[in-house]
Length: 154
Ligand code: FES
Image (cartoon, rainbow, N blue to C red):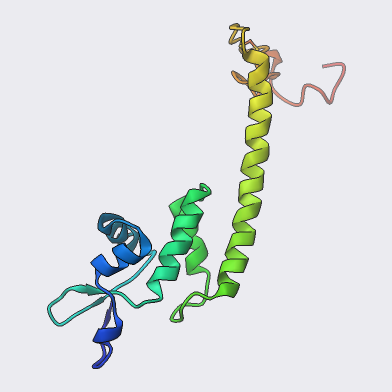
């Protein structure tokens, strides 16, 4: 949080104004601030005031959350950008391209799970040996340690 320069006060927004304009609850804004995702300045009366640029930042956070990006990743991404200037359309272009790749990966993973799940419907075995959802990555571990498929004499 920084100090407000003289004459700057009228250009700043209260937390209620940010909430109204962004559609995000005041409590969520406080939470974002506590996590370092947004920052405020203090008025003479020690009230939070936000630069207008915070609205773009909040919009980016909300869109990222909507597509399932964890807040910790949003925070890391925002911190990787140059500080001390408003976020730009170019920033959003870069972040959205990065998060689209994450979204595509999660969609592929979910499609794979759905396909495996289809095989379980009506089965009910829940077997550690044959059910891909019970033991998706370690099906051969019951046969012993090591690379079981690489040595045919093993
Ligand atoms: S429950 Fe039988 S294969 Fe998953």
